[in-house]
Length: 220
Image 1 (cartoon, helix red, strand yellow):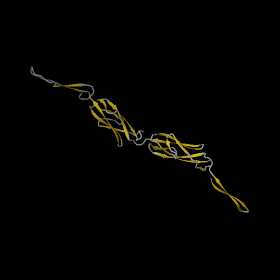
Image 2: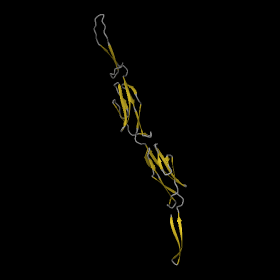
Image 3: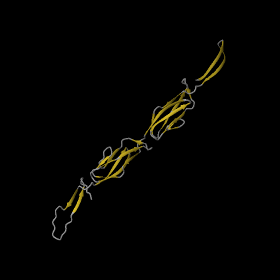
Image 4: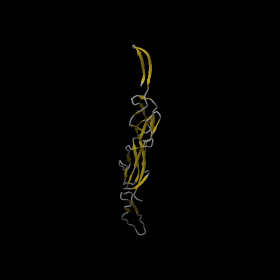
């Protein structure tokens, strides 16, 4: 493409000149960049599409963008939902496509279940913690558990001591907390006091009985 001069000469003298303008032919291919991009949810990606004719000449005919995500007329893509999306650039019969992967943003909240549970001593309770970014996309970053009772790295809590305990699930500064009540198990033994007693006729003796489960928790 370009502007060219065509000269007519006679005896090496230019006697006439014509100007020829060579424009690009119709678009036969489109260069779409970037290819296979990745962004985090809530961010954006700008795509560029360049059209060329069969001889590699740039053709600035308007190229349209489309996507199963959200993209505007200038190639500006954004999404708050994770997934793999397709971006298309088309001009005339020429089409080019690429993909863009939207991954979850940083965890902004943790759902911890169950909330305010109760078990008997010697039984266990499994807790589940799920992290979400600000757009409610699941974020599978490792979440750590802690407790003033006994809990392992997968959220498996158990205790043989009756009490109310706190369970925490956290990633960095993001924390969610719940409680779990451990109540006495079934009665396994009874303490009776006094063990032996002696009274005079007509008097009385008060006895006290205390029930315990198998883990020595008082069961009233």
